[in-house]
Structures are given as structure tokens and as C-alpha cells.
Length: 134
Image (spheres, helix red, strand yellow):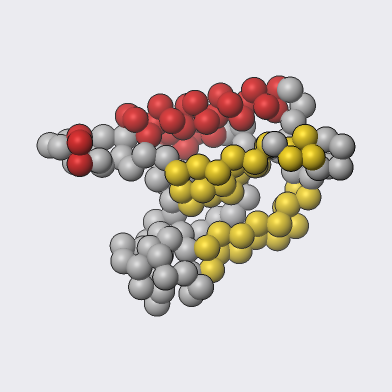
């Protein structure tokens, strides 16, 4: 939590579980642990918002916006849109999925946002958002 002009702002960096961990074999897609983490994250965000604190959640959710668990985050504003993950850490490959997010409480406004895949030598692109806290 940081002070944003006399008002606390909660910043949360996340890296949720992969929905196909080796420990879940032979199940090829087992999102239950990740989905539990999404529910806990959404509850924490709702608690902070209920206390009157703006909140920003950013990181690798290992979740696409097409999955059911994404709906659990409906209390947060999805700030950046676009693909952020590619299967290999080669920066000329285009992203094929969106796994990385910046989410904020609705009272935070977005000044700008960007996804930069050329700047990264990772399988994830760089996600940047400039936010204005009331």
C-alpha cells in the first residue's frame, strides 16, 4: 500500500498458477488451483474497495478473458487489451494469447496503456499502463 496524495492505494503484483501443472498429470488442463487464486484475488480487491481504497492488480494471471474465472474479476476495470504471450521467447513472434493484465478499481482512470512485444526477450510482452488516482 502506498500513499497517493493522502489516500492509500493498494498495488498487487500477481503470478497465478499455470492451469496445466505437471503435478496434475494426466489431466491436460486443470485450472482449479488457478481459479481458487482468482476468487481469492477478487475477494481481496473487493475488500480493499469496500474500505474505500483504490486498487491496482497487475501481472501474469495465466488466464484468458474467454475463461469462466475471468468473470470473477468483474469488480475491476480491465485497463489494457491485446495479446501478451507467445509460445517462445522470440520477440518477432506475435502474441497468441492474453495472460498478462493491469486491472484497477473503477475509480482509477487510464491516461494511457500499451503492450510492447519487441522490447521483451521473454515469452511475455511488456504491459504498461499510466493511471490517474483520484
